[in-house]
Length: 190
Image: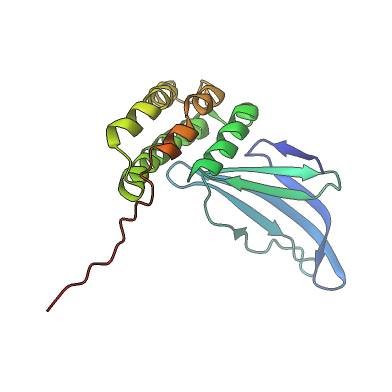
């Protein structure tokens, strides 16, 4: 099923949205952006009995999010993050392909968040995978440079594809020590 993504500030209005068992109403969906927290889905219905708007329902915050409309004209919410290899690959690819759907301030937030999560990924490989810090740094250094360049551009550059190509996930995974377990239990005599 194809989903047509809309700009993150676009409101999607659905008519004849089910309200209880027998009633239909209007539902409005939109994405709320906060420069320190990220993106969240907000929806609000109209009470068909009174004609007044109900309180908005708000989701938790996500690193990356968009609203879309599917072929049946239903609103769909898509969200992802930067935590780990799979999420990085999905989010970077999405942001490269849909760069024009985000404002420069949103893109600046996304580059800063991606930079921080890449730094956390490096630290996790060292602490929990036993990888050598200098080795991991050398593998992802060029990605840090590109991300910093994008942050300094205030979100005007679309280098997500280049950054994704620069991260050698296979080399990162191979940098882990085999059978490394930082959580070993040692017997303590009292």
